[in-house]
Image (cartoon, rainbow, N blue to C red):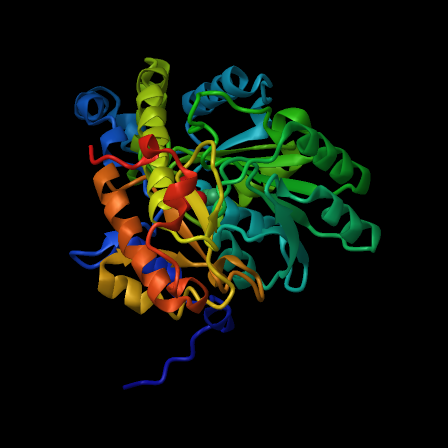
Length: 417
Ligand SMILES: Cc1ncc(COP(=O)(O)O)c(C=O)c1O
């Protein structure tokens, strides 16, 4: 067979963890890997009629190529929607339609990253973004987080020491992979800091509309539209099959993203754009999102109770207030990659921590998604995972089963639903 000479960037790609997540788990394995929305949240009752109507009545627009920046009426709708949700109305030149959050990350790389340029990220951060930054040959600098998300003081130290990242990539709410949310005071500090140094913030709001209680803090973009480029997606709030999102931010950055789009897919799919617009204008998000939020809140409650019930002392996890994800820290001596085969053999899958880190880190951590499995499955999955942890961690082997039960009231015992 011929020996094809693949591009250098194929060797910068990192592992195949993302491909594995998207492929799903084998039958019999309860998968807590992907940040997949729950299919019960898909608006199947309305989509068929909507798509049929667009095909019949709007084929010349919905089935045609569209301008790079998006169909005019769709941009108009998205401008209205940002004003409604974020209290800040972008100008026309400040918003484009994208083919989803991941495409916006790729466009940001094309528009801003030359090989060797610095990009700052949270440690840990979204796997897809880290892979894109690595493939763009960026020098990726990790900034520490704590329970309240990005440590702005740590970023300030880096900037004071001379670091000048092309942008700071951050996921302020229900962060991937930790589920953490940046409080308002830190949001203000972050935008002020970046303004002072003239550093662009790249705000990824993938899970923003999925708080458990329906409330949200001001977005970074709404606080500082002059220094924040925001990437939004309809993957979690509508459905990922539509592959659609938006970018809003300073007009010169948005113009470069629109220009870069000529080199990716040239335009987002017209049918998906018009679906979002029609669905949104008819109040679809207001009708469906409360139910979606209730599903995820209830799933988190089930997972949280199961973790409290099954996990031994020495295992810690984050407490998200929205989104799909929690981050588990295992006893120090455990390696999340090393015990994964045992977990899969026991019928449970997760994503180990290291791929979410730029260099070292996350060895004894793992990410769990609670969006997709049923609540009964979540409890079973945690039971299986806890058994694997006990079997492999010398520090907890001798401990009685369900050590934490004593510290939780019996009412917190997870119930099958
Ligand atoms: C934080 C974050 N950003 C971006 C994406 C990609 O979104 P999209 O499906 O719109 O490409 C995801 C998907 O899981 C994500 O978690």
